[in-house]
Amino acid sequence: MTRKNLFEILLVQMFVIFVAIAPTQAAKKIRVVTSLPDLADIAKQIGGDKVDVFAIAKGYQDPHFVDAKPSYMIKLKKADLFVQVGLDLEIGWVPPLLEGARNKKILWGGDGFVDASKNMDLLQVPRGDPSKLRAKGDIHIFGNPHYWLDPLNGKIIAQNIFEGLIKIAPENEIYFKQNLEAFIRKINDAHQHWQALMAPYRGTEIYAYHNSWPYFEQRFGFKIAGFIEPKPGISPSPKYIAKVINEMKNKNIKIIIIEPYYPPKSAELVAKNTGAVLVELAPEVGGQPGVDDYFKLFDTNINKLIEAFKEVGVEPKPFSN
Image (tube, rainbow, N blue to C red):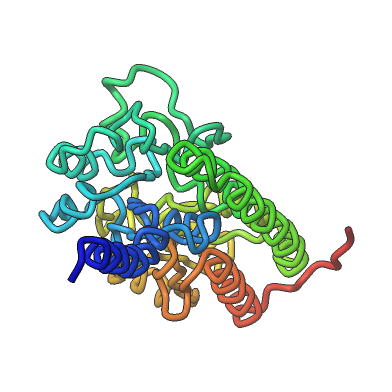
């Protein structure tokens, strides 16, 4: 075999190797880790086939309390982008995970860090001396963090994720922008539909177990008259439960909403003694069977509420644009 023939064979072998590995390199995706599944679903819709997304918390878990497992640190170690709700919602578990992952690019201030609360119009921002807030229960010092439960806030979340993605992969900006615009159009169309469904029940008073719903309440116009918890994160005493029962009877309130991760015993007792319907809503994507994306979160919760309104005999008001 001549030197020329050997050289030609080596060239062919190198070409074969290049062809074999090229698709793998081209298919490499941006690794996105999010704190909650709602953020993960929006990241998928903006990132499309350019991203591989993993959510740490499950939709049926209390997002305030998630175990900081070593497996999550491994995911974060390999992540290109991390997205959090912020506003101290995940303060008990995200910082230890980020510290343990030792991935500088996804720490606060890095190109791979996204706080989805950026530019959010926040509700229930507490006033007064911060040192005295703890006496009021589990109060969030920056404002209520459950902002994703207003679908129009989903557009702000999507914009923040888009900005994070183009820092990581600016070559895909046009692609991400097209997905962002499609998401916004879909949200706007769905929002009109949801508003039409809920409009006949505007002003209807209900009770909630925990203060997770102010953004959902404000967007769709019903009214949360009170809570089964006397203070956020504090279990009700028998005396307080009796007070709630009396108030619901006096106001003829017949619906209580609750998240899947709170103990239902107290809410069930109140419902039994007032003739109210206890409705378990999905606080996050994955929080109920079939709630597997951000749009189904609102489809499911709105339909459940309307069914409950009808069951307890709430008279719908005429709807007008």
